[in-house]
Length: 80
Image 1 (cartoon, rainbow, N blue to C red):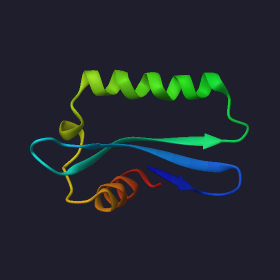
Image 2: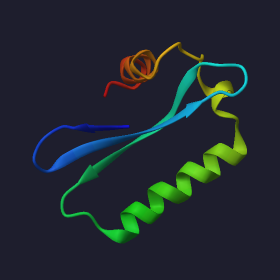
Image 3: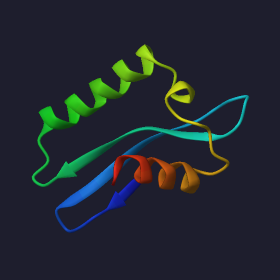
């Protein structure tokens, strides 16, 4: 999921749907600024998988019924 902040900024929300339990969680959010540097994107991707392997997404967050709810809760917790 993505949110465009301005002509030079965006947020990539790293969301997961829990199967078979149901529900959605946001594991993390990456702020992207122009110009986009490949090493920055590689860093975000590496962090995504390191965090995923270290701790299940549903252990980091309560599952929500929709992506919108999960993102709103994540933003409220982290001030996005």
